[in-house]
Structures are given as C-alpha cells and as structure tokens.
Amino acid sequence: MNTKYPETLENLIDSFGKLPGVGRKTAERYALYVFMHMKDEDITDFSNALLSLHTDIHICESCGNISEGNICKICSDSSRNHRQVLVVESIKDLITLEKVNEYKGIYHVLNGSISFSKGISIDDLNIDSLMEKVKGGEVDEIILATNATLEGETTAKYLKELLKSYDVKVTRIAHGLPVGGDISYLDELTLLKAFEGRREY
Image 1: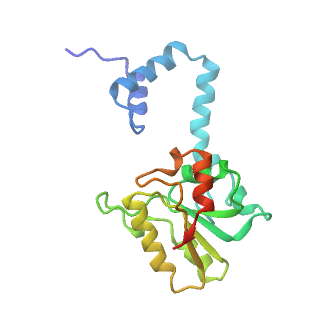
Image 2: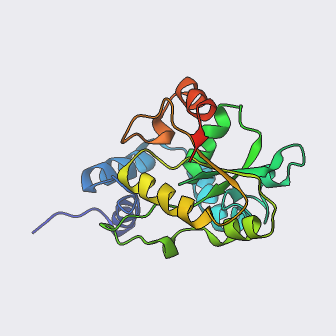
C-alpha cells in the first residue's frame, strides 16, 4: 500500500504542483517547507497575498498591463508620450523594459505570440485596444518589441501587415537582441542598445 501524506498536506502539494515547472518532488519539498519552517504569520501573509490577486489586481483596460485600478500607472502618467506605443508579448517583458528607465512612451501587452504549434492564433492575442488607438489617430509610432523567436517574428510581421494601411510609423527593436532570445532574460545594457537601435519595420 502506498504511503500518502495527510489529506491537508496532499492538497497543498497538489496546489504547488499546478505551478509551471514544478513536479511532484518539488511540490512536496515546498509543502513540507511551509509546514516545517514557515511561521504562522508568514503563512497568513502568503495566503492573503494569493487571495488578494483576484480582488486587488486588474488588467489595464488600455494596454493589458497589471494594475491596482482599471488603468495602470504608466497609462495614467501624463508626463509620458502617449503617442508612442511599445508592443511586448508579456507583462514580464514590460517590467524588464521599464527597469532600463529609458523608454518614456506607453506600452501594449499582447499576452502571447502567434504559435501554430501551440494553437495560438491572432484572435487569442490582445490586439483590439491597440488597433482602436491607431484607428483613432492617437498613435504616431508603434515599436514592435516581440521576442527574437520564430513566434515573435511571426507576430511582428503580422502586426506590420495589419498596420501598413494606417498613418503610423512602425519600428522594431533589433540591435543587441540575439535570435531566439527572450527579452525578460536580457541585461539592461543590451536592452538599451536594442531600443536605441530600433529601425523602420
């Protein structure tokens, strides 16, 4: 007969196992660490942080960033250039680019990239609100900062085709980004050079 953990601990192991990249053994280690080493107040804080995600955090209605309100701090900042939009695949990419502290425009988060192998089409991406801004004449430049992967390039080319009939400049960050690279793993200097070296697309 297989020896199992008590049901409460098994439930916690199952919960940790739902995280990406976390297998059974890692989930067991996490659950046992919580039980054996975390103080009650730390467990309470951890639980409250998880519970507050769906009550206190929202998706920005304008750009797709995470926010504590309906509109994120970047989109609400009147000092930024709202006529320049940097298009990224993920919120993590946005945060990484913001750390460079060089870009002063606003963002648009696609929430993914076109991937035929994964069954992700253009309809699955967050594009409608971006196109509304373009159609409304609110944007002068779209900077495509999708990753230098097959999926990222496919997505960038699709957006370029989608935007070519509108009076908007389309550029693509290039210099410093290795083929197959992921923006969120790059250092700040590489990102800065990629941004400065953007070209007409």
